[in-house]
Image 1 (tube, one colour):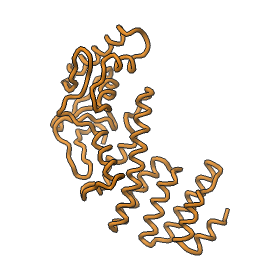
Image 2 (tube, rainbow, N blue to C red):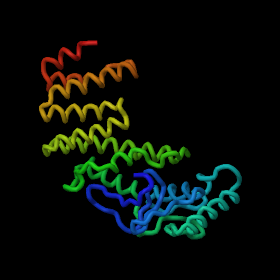
Image 3 (cartoon, helix red, strand yellow):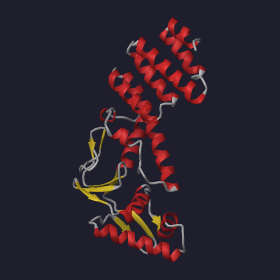
Image 4 (cartoon, rainbow, N blue to C red):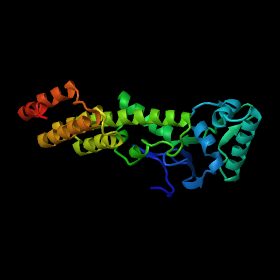
Length: 257
């Protein structure tokens, strides 16, 4: 999908107008026309876009350019703003003291987090129960940016998305959409194969569809992985679930190895 002009779709909701894309970005689309962000402005745009409020200029400049004095950091911020506008991306509202995104601008990360909140809290509509490629993109916010604030935001978004994908899998099971439930669980597992809650969501989906062999293979594959990587067994809770729901071979496999 890299290099294409995209509009973000979350549960079939299309975001038109002006969108800041932080997954596989940052870049900006204005009425679906792509604008690449100048290199010297990427960190500033991402920093402001991830906050849903005005940001003090001094705080932004000090965080983004911590080396040197305040005067130099402020100059770097002004330069980043100038480069943005020069690239046709005039979406930051700036005064003498603060910065923010203009009101009409949407951010893909905030749209995706809104979807995750609806899934986790149960306030979902039919369009939210869609497994879309953007769920995978959302697991890698601002790739290649390793500032401390970016790493923290990346992990925050990643954790919310993983929890949401696991919950999505269970909600899809509850409405009989087993193939989609398995796909959602596999998305979470692809991001973190050692994550037991994601592995359990996959096993639960196989069990709900009465695919006992798939459930067994999934459990055994996970058991072998954590033994090799971490030197531990799956939790007693997961093993007990498999024994209880899968049956006799579940008990035998829990005692092997």
